[in-house]
Structure formats: structure tokens, C-alpha cells
Length: 179
Image (cartoon, rainbow, N blue to C red; front, side, top):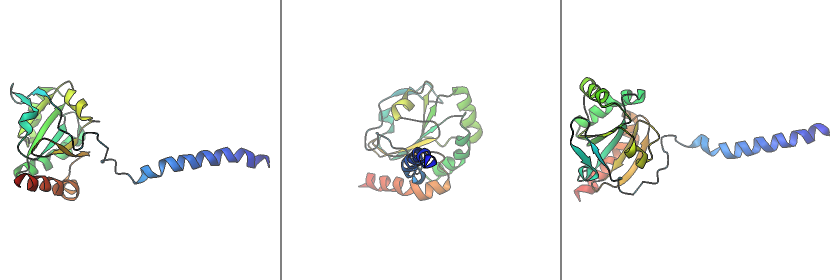
């Protein structure tokens, strides 16, 4: 009888652990919740990676776009970059946010690996990333033509992710903008 009394707390503890962790086993880690969905892209005023031009939220308006958070320090960004180049060649509008990086490194990266970004925002201090709730890089936001955030994807945008998760959402925003 004494062993049973000792086992009850252990079984209760294991039951609570299973109850709390079970739902997490079936969640997609790339689908982190964002309080910014259906809200305007945050206001900002930051320099362009390749010039001293100031870019603001107003520069992002007019076309649906992917806003890709990237950095030269990010190994996964290197994996994702060829796919972004391919998407840009196909006409997908992509804006970059070079997050907490050294600008000279970013310039070297873009020269070596090509530049898929129509605009490339220099977020040296991470202030825009903070306002976007960025956990790290890469992260990609889909914005509509009015600059409203419609979706957030955390992780590498590879061809499968583009085809199965993002292409339809992007095309829907493009179609909506044409109406």
C-alpha cells in the first residue's frame, strides 16, 4: 500500500505534463501567433542597405509584398536566399529587413548572392524587428497593397513552403489589389 501512495503524485505529475504538452506536439512551429495580423505594418524611418536613402512605411504601400527579415549571420537565411532570388525573378515583390547586421557584411552578401529585394531596410539596432515581434531570422511577413500585415511565417521559405503555404496567400493579395 505504501508504494501506491508514493506512485500517486508521480502519476498526477505525468498526467499534467501530458495534458499540457500534448497540444504542442501538433502545432506547426512556423505558425507563431502575431498580434500584428490584420494591423498596419509599423511606422519606421530607417536607411536603405545600399544607399543613404531613408525608407519609411509609405514606401511599402501600393503592392502586395513579402517582407523578409534576414541577416548575414543567419545560416538559415543562406538556405532561403536562392528561393527568394527565384521568386523575385518571377515577379514576386520582396522587401528585405537586414536585421541586427553589419552593413558592410550585408553589401558583400548581396553582391555575392544577388539581391532579390526591391527595397532593403537597414535595421542595425533591431528597432523595426522589435516592433514586428521578430524572434530571429528568417521570418517573412505578407503585407497587402495598403501595408496591412496578413500573414507571418517563421523559418526558411523554401520551394515547398512557398508552394504549399505562401504562394496562394500572396496570389490572393495580388488578386485583391487588382479589384
